[in-house]
Length: 334
Image (cartoon, rainbow, N blue to C red; front, side, top):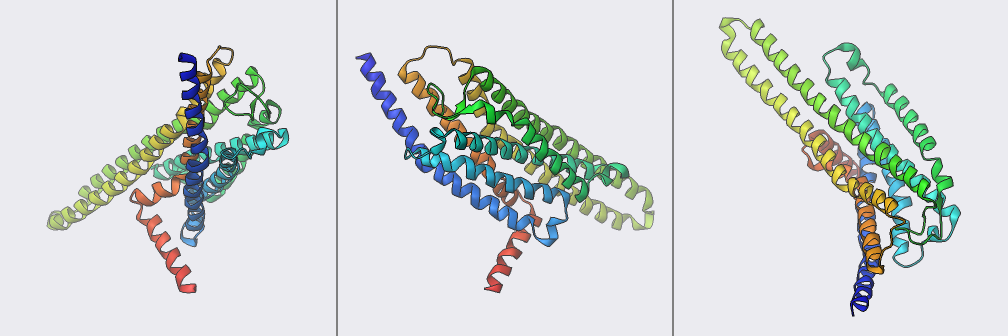
């Protein structure tokens, strides 16, 4: 009775997993692709494209589009048993390689953008000078090359037609899986998130320091007969800096929190799956593991698709204004 009950539960869970791959994947694909395409249009506008931070976000959005396209299309096809990467080793290797590389590039470019913001917020001129379009372009090239080299091992490690793995296209040995899992966990997810967090906090700290320095200098320069004017200017400036502080803190920490929520589950699940590969499991247990893995995998694509919505909804007037102007120009031309 227990065995038949487990088989019944496993069948239900397997069916739910298939439906997730079919329909939730389609939603994420549309959500992410539309968001990143809009990002590309907005960030390539003349008012933003010369900004190094905007340039990094632009290339990151392109990388996200590639990641979603190569990653999610196979998930959608898997819902109808049409995923060629399950049976064809060449497609399996290429898909895994492009997906890992593009996702890592996207994460590191966002981290690099956070560093760029920190450079720009520094009081030292030499550090502020480091925030330039030329350095952003150089950094992008270096990141792309390093990511390609880093995940070259996927071409060897990944194989199709595997059994007892979360996906049929997966690392063929325990050593390969550990190598890929550790690389993904540390290089693709944890290190960039740590950099975003550290430099985000440092940026906010710099802004606060600059704010207090300006207040101090303003108070020294103003004479007694301009006390009223000084008070008005100081209060106005205080409010402006507070708004900038709030906006930066809002965007940075929302991005970090959401990226953490959407990417860490897959890291944990990948490592767990690899470490328990030789553990005997029941059919129900294996089905549960595959369901959790597939769900965690889909969450990572949400992370790739959400930057546009964060920038738009988190209070950035420049981004929203540029988007409105872009939409108006499109309708005006039509």
